[in-house]
Image (cartoon, rainbow, N blue to C red):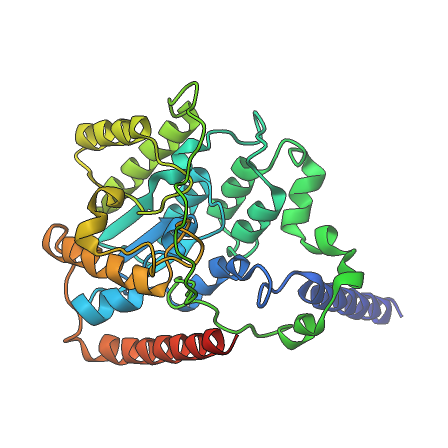
Length: 356
């Protein structure tokens, strides 16, 4: 009788856990049609390995660089581990996690997030739980994810009950019943691939019509938290023999102040790093703000991203020594499929854009 009771309890417990797991899958946002960039973090794991270049950063990487173009033009294998308003500590822990799966020759970090210096210890109006979730929920569990959560939680979240909602997302999303759509059922167990090796394609064209003007700052100094994490990036890449390259994407807003640029230049020189501010090379890249942006200069569209990637690819190949791997049959076959998917996506989006 006692044995039967134990078996019954065990079966009941397993059933309860299975139901909770199912409900969690159902209630968590799918990011397929709305806020698609929330799906980016989780897509990496199916593409991990054999990437010689890894990008980390915010929308200035995942909307401005095309890994497919880097492959087609230079045979460079790359992946973009980007996320919406990805903060520097999130970029660092994604870097750290990446080394669990592969050791790239070059790690590329977009420096815009240096302007955000606060975490849960001090609070900041620039931080939002929604962005944290979009960057963190898709990470597989590891010490890197745990530490990224601790570093990222907002002042309102900085308590243990909030940590449990990251451990068990159903505690956070249990009230999404009224928001469920057909997508929540369609993508319950399998999601579509929304990116091309981390690149989120845009084909629209919305030219720059006015100069982007922002009020000058009282203090242009980057905060200590940002410098600390940049130091950690340098040390981490040195540990694995990976070259860290700092970049600033060529976007017109938010403004990248000269005072910020000078600080990064001085840091790069002091640490022997390559730093490229692509804003200084717009003419050489061939960027046309009448045709190469889909949102008046905040980001590039696919036509601008392909131009920027051709330009950067030459630097990666010649200055960083990233190899051309088109002669490796298995890798070439894999990337041939990626190119096909990319071209089909581009054609579909262009067709839809023409009809709208």
